[in-house]
Length: 310
Ligand SMILES: O=C(O)CCC(=O)C(=O)O
Ligand SMILES: [Fe+2]
Image (cartoon, rainbow, N blue to C red; front, side, top):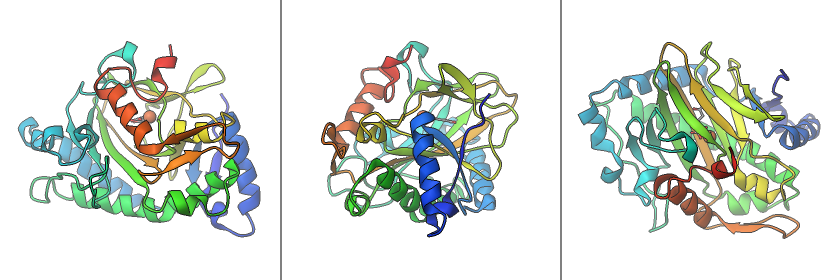
């Protein structure tokens, strides 16, 4: 098995090493669409504490968790926030409802009537000690320290002008998730992520539950301690005129204990209209996001390019 490439966030931030690292990033985006992000600077303790607080949340009684369900949320679409019980989501139409439990969070900002923005109905500290606090703290670290460096690097290898990132990621849209996969049969159907890119923190478990489509095979992605997994989304693939890949992936969790993962789906400003540098592709961020939600939650056609995957 080919080992997945590693990209160093620190090298992407360094004036001496940046260009060489951008070359590696370019070929990684062409050939894999997936990589480990190392030297990311996030606190390992904070990640572990967030995973622990997430276990504690999911272990609460069902009736308590359901106080934070979609219909309790004030954001449009309601399915973008709050608690989803086991078998609540379909990522691939042929695979049915996923055995996994979810909590979705966004940035605690003002929506001004726009979709996917606005505060989440979150459990307070009495109900779920540290859960909301740790999730939002990790969110700030990701959005302040990781997204700008990685996002600018992607903009550069896409061949965008030097202001592109600033123009379209002034107030990026975030869908942040916590997922619990139950032991022995947890799963997420095969799909692609439809955003710009996804950062994934996964627990360090021996079970290797995450699988990616690489060179015509499903390949397990072992967790690499101290790293994040990054996968490119469909928007990035579009903006590259298909030179870069949004790699299909899925989860088959057969380990004997639960598995928690923490994906951060990164999208541009919600009111952006984006074009590839050649002008061959263009789309509106809100429209693409809404149609993905319609596909997942209303028509059951799955996420991203799921319908193309057999
Ligand atoms: O839990 C994981 O490892 C991946 C989840 C995923 O691909 C998704 O929610 O889009
Ligand atoms: Fe995904």
